[in-house]
Length: 119
View 1 (cartoon, one colour):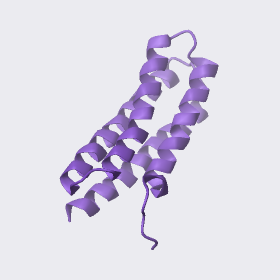
View 2: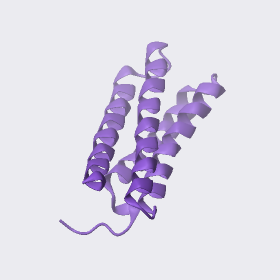
View 3: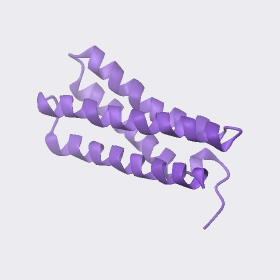
View 4: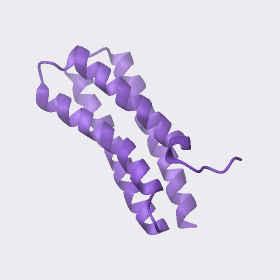
């Protein structure tokens, strides 16, 4: 396994980056009429990416874990907000479920990083 030297090398950050792009696309296409939901969804998705990066750059393992826990929480927030989008019929069910699975994957990847750092 290659040593990870930059946060951009982390699969969790790469997946979060994909998620941000997809959230912005859905927001542009389907959430024009609900700016508060759109903004919250966008902010939460960006928070995942930003906190993974911030955690990677942290000095101590405890500091890294703290930011990763925040990122994992933001992934859960995005997943939850996507239920609103799906339940009120603002976007295609399959499209939203794909993004929710991406959030779950990010959560699993982050949990793996947290477990590694806590050892």
